[in-house]
Image 1 (cartoon, rainbow, N blue to C red):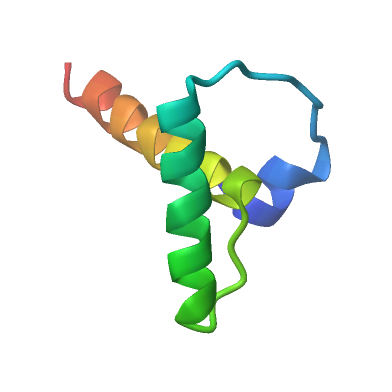
Image 2: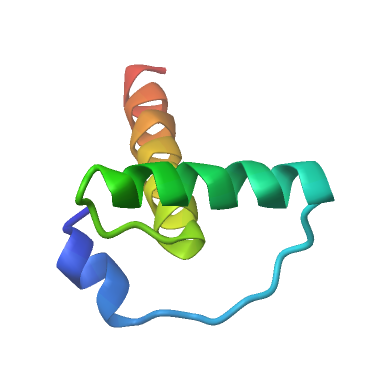
Length: 63
């Protein structure tokens, strides 16, 4: 999926995370920001979903 096309129509949602999950994502975002990358918790979640979608689609094609 083309990332710019995939993000053109965004839906807003709320997710519930445990404190551990939230602080893990926050820590990861801060670490990535130290590496001069512009990451937020939201961008990390989007990246994870994009990668999972690609993996899932590849598996569907193979089956």
